[in-house]
Image (cartoon, helix red, strand yellow):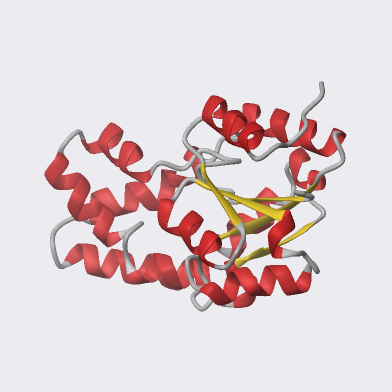
Length: 204
């Protein structure tokens, strides 16, 4: 029944947990909330993902906003260090290789800024994908329905033959609402269980 597995990147293929990142550095829930709103949770971050703002311009606006609340040091730290989060999730890549070996086609659908997409495209696992859509290239972001339909149209995928994997419940639900099977990624074991429940054959 299923032929296509569609992957989110952040939190599924690469590590991305901004709140943990902030807590590790500032060790204060209060500071974490303020700095999150100035960076990862900001309009500038969303515009970066949407591909309507450059990294340089976004950083400048975030630092200006930080200056108004005396958080320049913290925001500069985020700007300089946040990419260190993006370690490849090796277990996910192993599962991707297993899916590929068993005849499934792999695609990506990710909210990602263009400079980070350029970096991820250089990683070994990127060649496992048969295609995909990044938010920065189409100026759309999950959970907007249009980004899902853009992927399905561009890659000529059937909705009832596709599974979408995301660590964000809202994004997985948005796929489900369109007729794509959505899996909420929590950890490798639960992911494998979910694939098994969907009837996927994963022979070693």
